[in-house]
Length: 272
Image 1 (cartoon, one colour):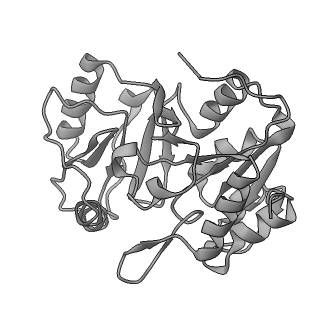
Image 2 (tube, rainbow, N blue to C red):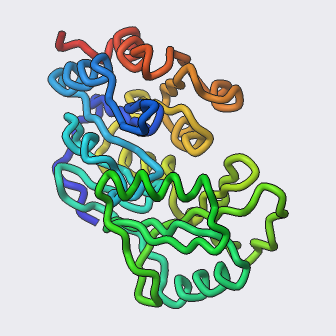
């Protein structure tokens, strides 16, 4: 793994969840980056702070707007893929035979699924699952690539969906995966060897950046591992209470320019 140039131990690094932290969703499902958030990123970047997006989305479904922000790198797919300065540093691929076994089992269990990959996404939907359909339609409207479901499909993680009145079937075949349940009908599935937090730990070590100079910003349950491994954990005002309990600083919501407020209070905008 090639990580790039040696970094100073006193370098400051920040990791940002995307949905609900860097962005807000409007009523028409359009994604916006609040002006205060953009200003905070620009000022911190100009001040020499390293800025990484750290998202559960694979790079193939990261909104094009996010790719225009002054970011130094991306941690995508809950740590299954890492990029810095346009160069891939790490990618975890599920073994082909294991991928095929997973796809066949999901089909057997009659679950709807979104398979997520660096290149895009693929869908199986025997349930005609409403919430999943809305996600897929948003992905298509944003121009993300729809991949074909076949034994040759390469994916890093996936999300399973069931009907609200059904029980989850036996998911013990996913013993090598972390299963993050979000509500009663949706579970995000990620290889146990990967997480937002493990990616941060690896980057801090390889870039020789002190734990004391690490900051994470999030709003959701899939940000928990990220918030646990940084010295400073900043949680947005719309986050569940279980996530706020992990915070060293709770700020306002993204739409209330909570990111700017927090970064200003934490002296991350020194260049202004």
